[in-house]
Image (cartoon, rainbow over all chains, first blue to last red; front, side, top):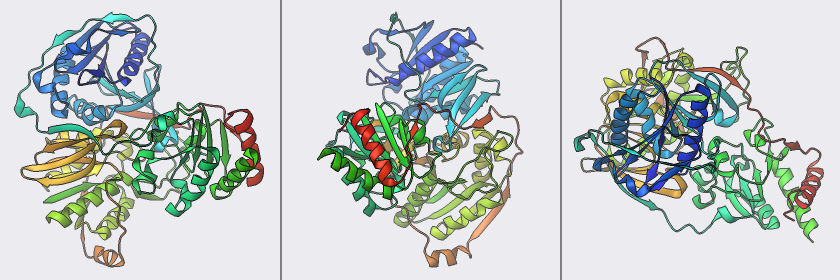
Length: 323
Length: 254
C-alpha cells in the first residue's frame, strides 16, 4: 500500500475548482513522503472534461465512469470508489472538502474501517493533519493510527493550486461494477430559491453582522454604519437562520464568497464556515467582545469591546469625516 | 413513524476555552454544556414531523452523567422518550467508535427515521450521521433543510454550495443530517418541563469499551495568527477616531 490518490470533483462536465487545491495538497504530501500521486474523477461521459493539466506531477489519472454515476449519489460514488481504492491500494486518499464529499466520504472511509480526517487546513511532517475545533477557536493535530488507507479532505482556500508548468494529463477509464439496485436515493435537478438580487461578491465595502448583535431590533445600528460607509450589509449564518436578514446576505460556505477592499465584521466570532467566505478580503476590521474570537486571527485591525458602544461612535465619526 | 434523534452535548458557544494541562483536549472543569445547535434543529424537525404525521420521537445521547440534562431538555421540548448511553470515554473514541455505540444502542429500536445535526460545534468532523447510516445499512442524505413524507419514503431538500439546492427522494428507513435554519426552534414550555419528569429515560451501558482508533487527536493548541492584527484600544470615541484614520489612510475607503 503506497502512494497518494486525489479524488477530484466535477458536475455535468465542469470541474469544481477546489479539486485542484486538493490535487496541490496531494502533490505536497506525496513529495514529503517520496511517493507517487494519482488522480481520479467520477461520473459518466467524462471525456467532455477534455484534457486537463496539472501544475505538478500526476503519475496516473482515472476516469471512473458508469451510466449509474451520471448523477451524484452517495451509494454510487461509495461503491465505485471502493473498487478503485481496492485496485490502487493508496496509502492516502485526498478530497476537496465540498458538500458532496461531506455526503459520501465518511461512508467510504467506513467501508475500510477508517475515519475521514475532514476539513484539513495544513499537513506537517509525520504526516500530521491539522484541523480546527470549536468553531475555529483551537487547532488540533490528527494522526492516522489505523492500518488502512488514510482519508483526508482539505478545506477550501488552504492549498494554492499553482498555474505554472502545466502538463496535460491523460485519463485511463476505470469501469466499476454497479447495479441500479445498489443506488437507493433518487436525486432531482439542482435549483435556486429565487433570483439572487444582492451580489456581495462585487461589493468594495461590506459591513457584516453576527450573533453578537443579540436581537433583531439591534441590527439598525449596523445598518446605519453600513449606510455611512456606503457599504453592503451582510451577515453570518445564524442571523439569516433567525430570519433577521434575508439568506442572500449571508457570507460563508453556504452563502456568498466575498473579497472586498474592506470587510468590517461586527459581533462575528469567525466560525470556519464564515471565514472561508471572507478570508479573501483585502482588509478586515473586527469588533467583538471576546478577545479570543477566531475572527481576530484574520483581522488587520481589531477592537475588543462592546459593539453597542463602538458601532454608533464609529458611525458618527465616519459621517463627521465625510462631511 | 418512529423517529430517533441522535444529539450531542457540547460546550456553550461563548464558553471561554482553555487547553487542558496535557495538551490533548480542553479543560472541562468550568464549562457549561448545552445541546449541539445543529442537533437542536434535528430535534425540531423530528417534533414537526411527528405533529404532521404522528408517531414517536426518541432522543439518544452518548456521554457521561452530565448529558442527561440535555436529554431532559429535549423531553421538555416534546420528545417522548430518551436513551442515555453511558460512556465516560468518548475522548478515546474516534468517529467510528462513537457511531458504533450509537448503532448498537439504536438497533433494537428499529426506527423509521434517524435525524442528527450535520456537524458538532466542538469537533466539527461532520461525519457521525453518515457513518451511523453506513453501519446500520441505511441510505442517508446530508445538510437537509426540509423533510416531507411521501409515498414510499421521503422527499428531502439538500443544501448545496453557493445557494443551490436539490430535492432527493429516498426510501425508509433512512438517516438525515439536518442543517440549521430550516425551522424555527421552539422553547420548552412550563407544561413541557413538568411533563418531562414523567417521561422515560433509559440508561444503557455502551456496547464496547474504547479500543484502537483509526485516527488519533494528538494535540490541541491555540491557532497561530494568520495576520498581524493591530488592536485598537481606548474609549469608544477614541477607538472610532483611530478606526476612521485607518479607513482614510490605510484601507482608503473614505
